[in-house]
Amino acid sequence: MAHDPERVQWWNSFIFAIFGAAILIGSPICGWVADRTPNRSITFYTGLLILAAATILFGFARASWVLVISRLFQGLSAAIVYTVGLALLVDTVGRDNIGQWMGTALSSSSFGLIVSPLLGGIVYAKAGYMAVFGMAMALIVVDILMRLVMIEKKMAVKYKPADEVTPANGFYGTFTTQQSEDHGHTNGSISSGKRQDNADDAPLLVNVSKEPPRAKGKMPTILVLLGMPRLLAAIYGIFVNVAILAAFDGVLPLYVKTLFGWNSLNAGLIFLCLAIPALTGPLVGKLSDKVGPRWIAVAGCSLTAPPLILLRLVAHDSTEQKILLCGLLVCCGFTLILIVSPVAADLSAVVEAKEQANPDAFGPGGAYAQAFALFNCAMAAGTLFGPVVAGSLVDNHGWGVMTAAMGAFAFSGAIPAFFYTGGWIFDKKA
Image (tube, rainbow, N blue to C red):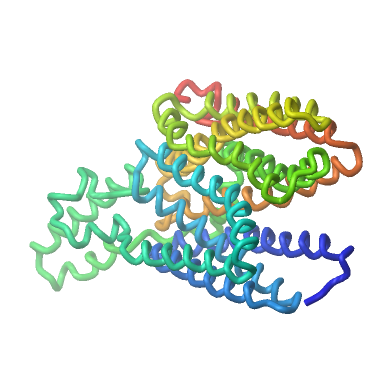
């Protein structure tokens, strides 16, 4: 497979766009399916198997159209794994510690996204092209093996005595209080029905065991979610976070190569300044669980703006400038992680609050997977938006204008977070 060197950048951008488009299109579909599947693990396994097949296809690709297809399937698998994985997390850990565990999951993801190019470059330099894909396949196999020993909480209940594992309301994970009460009434009806004559009671038993039918003409769940300002604030927050990180990925390596004369390894190592602070995600999530998500998210967006704007000061080659660059990137890493955990935790809280207010709002399957599908769409949009806009600004207006624009963009995330994250600011319950 050979291309005109001038077309290589175009193909890189096109293949990256295909990946993002697959996530954007696939995530809502995967969320809808996951919310209507009794066992989320099956959908999760499907995503991992698609990822394995796509990675093998990408590794052996020798034609452009094969690369496009492989990236299409990689995007689809990412849509499945992210959407179902986050919904499984909510099902498992419950409400009290959701911020901490969301912080753990998403900070680990951010760390992997930042470090993987560095590891891939080192392996490629030492062992060659196929060794990189061997490393990726090994990680996928480990992931699949770990999922094989994973048991969903609602499935585990079936194999334990009810008095050991069943809470007072009889439900785990994402069921609301009203749904729990309905479940109690249904169980009571069934229990009393068993003491009556079977011939008279059979139709009653059938009726009470069925879920209520979805009302005709009811708005689709995805549209209901998109009409909730609090959820949109959470989605915009993660969009800002991912777009800024993706912007660094798109413009920083070339900038330090041009300014400092760094090679690929040194340019990759600079991303550790962003990656290491991401490991504090669980602590941020735990703090969010205790004090609420609003002010942490607002602080994250607001405090990210100054170091981004100050990056314009890195303009010539010297030791002091390199230290300044590293210091500002570390500051960005610590402030960006303040955004992720609170908005992700608040996303699940939005769905819970809606279900408590109206238990039939989303139907029997709930809406957690579809909510995180929108979350995943925002992440995918951020990965497309960040590099394209930042790259265009650097090419047309220079590094200083780009950093100022990214700083203003970061601050824009604080506005919806202030008003809506954790609930409407003027609501006495918020």
